[in-house]
Length: 152
Image 1 (cartoon, one colour):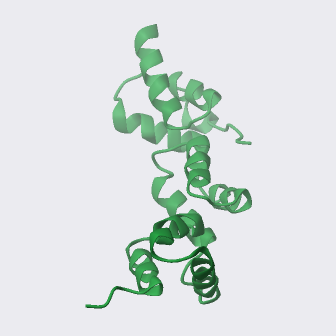
Image 2: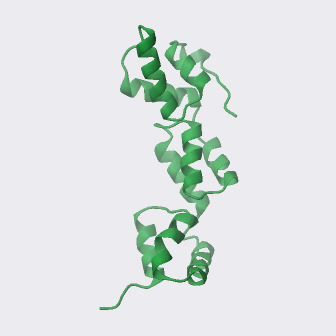
């Protein structure tokens, strides 16, 4: 039985989900030389089979409801996506404060009643990558019409 070619391996990966160029390069590294992989990825890019921009947009769209701007950026950087593409993908999502409020509501049903509970809820939101001022606004129960925090 023949082993799958480098192209077939790449297509199998991309049929499951979008990968960044860096992720796909790492995944294919055991099966070909750097030159072969680069040439094959260049061809896939020409045919629009692999796109870092599309991967970033899809990843942000599926994870934006759970994570804040900082976490989204860091995750995409770890996946090898360029900063310009990250900014484009993140700028197209909903308001940070609305998303933080939704993430908070999915976990907690009431505002914190003491400092210990406040710290616990704040850590939850901060770990998800929401900015400190956003966390502060959510945990102080500011009405949504006043929720207008600018993100950098």
